[in-house]
Amino acid sequence: MRILIIGGGNMGQTYARSFLRSHIATEEKMMILEKSVEKATELRKMNIGTVHHDPAECLPLADLVILAVKPQDVPALFNSIKPFCHEQQVFLSIMAGVKISSIRKGLGVRKIIRAMPNLPAQIGMGMTVFTSTDEVTRIELVLVQNLINTTGKSIYTEREDALDAATAISGSGPAYVLYFMEALMQAARDMGFSESEAELLVSQTFRGTIELFGKNTYSCSEWIRRVASKGGTTEAALQSFAERQTKQSIQHAAQAALKRAVELGKTEP
Image (tube, rainbow, N blue to C red; front, side):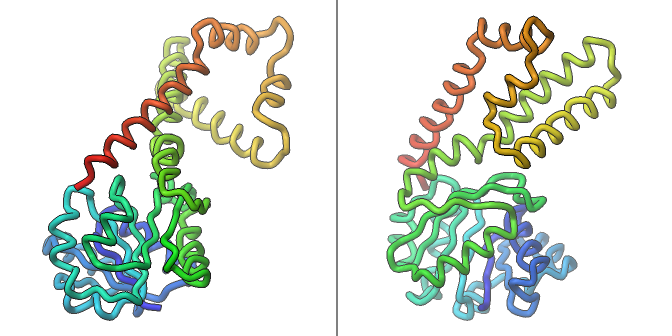
């Protein structure tokens, strides 16, 4: 299978490297289409596939086309590549907010998969939610999921609107985690730790807790009860969270992200 990645930015490079590292694809069958001459020159030095500047050279050869450009570039992109698309190709889009109906209309293709990855995909720890049109065969869907899973884990959904929810939870989620980490690091510094010590304290606590959660069957609530002794320090912190409705604030923030994702979908390019 020949793969063409359109867009040589961070996510385009992430996919190319992940596919090659997992040996699901070979460098000979990997192509990247990049409009920037400067960036194309940089990409050629990375040995992650054949880099092209003209869609006529590569698009007709591709079995799978990955759309990894910024949403604002969509109109120009569709105009430039539509003449070279054909119905047997599978199109995987990771363009935020660009709906399947727009891709179908803009390119005249029917086999479309739309995915929402997140930032940790860059280190093989990503979370991707994806959906597809009925024209994508089961074999094609499994093949694409195997490719996606080289960057982490994935969930398939039959509902395209679930990608808005995925955007609010896993897409934006890394920023929520980092926001909480930043607050704890500041608290640690206020308590007398140096900046490097605060970063180590917090990052290792998060890393260890995630590993602990993943290797056991206890729920979050059960783990919290195991940590929080009656009348102890953890209970005091949890009581403060409860008084300030921290849990409700987090849930409200996620809903705000979902609302914005839906709004952006209505005003897509």
